[in-house]
Length: 279
Image (cartoon, rainbow, N blue to C red; front, side):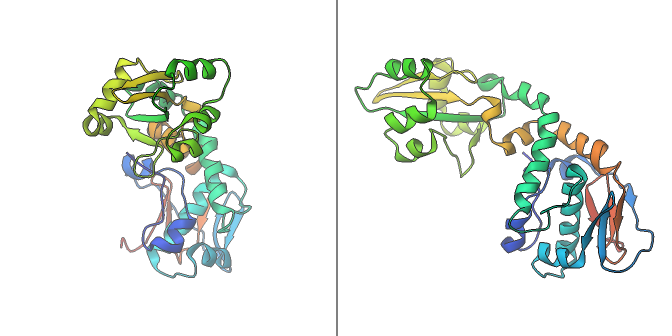
């Protein structure tokens, strides 16, 4: 599955700083409609609808790197985020840039994510991603009792803090992690933990409804998290095609973009700054 773009090259610090908008464009778009500057000179590296990226801001984005790929990726990142927000404030800052990028992505996903919602809410019967919360219970603690408390108004997070036998799950509100990610690929869960998947099926787990899971050594409460509770990267992945189309047609292509010819060309179809030389 596609993941949010990161700048290729060094892991630190550029990759840490530049969490970008949508990896789906790289995977699904390959046309080459390009925007070229009109010969301007000076300190302006790029412009989007009149907003300017200066050479000093570019040095901040790249941590002083002059490697061509990193420079073009940093410029493209700035163009993408500013084209969505129509406001460059904080985008070039290592302290606030990631939050601004996340805000841009959230804006687009919120407006164009219904296809992702429909897919996700198929749950065990068709969603490629499963985002779970779970509360393993002490032997002798009634799963039905805890479930009744949740249904009566106790939040799942508070129930996890009160009843979970797993410290990590108690602290995270029951959020289950797989390789550091909050959502598991359904196919991987079925293949890697078929018994657990079958228990979910037998409990008739559906999105947004907590259920009691029964194991040989005790019980647990599980919840397929509601779509609006799923992390942003998951919602982006589930609606990647729709979000990518919206980014291209509503933001990248209509934007008035200038890139200094010292750095390359803006390719609105791909959401990238590409080199003149084809390197």
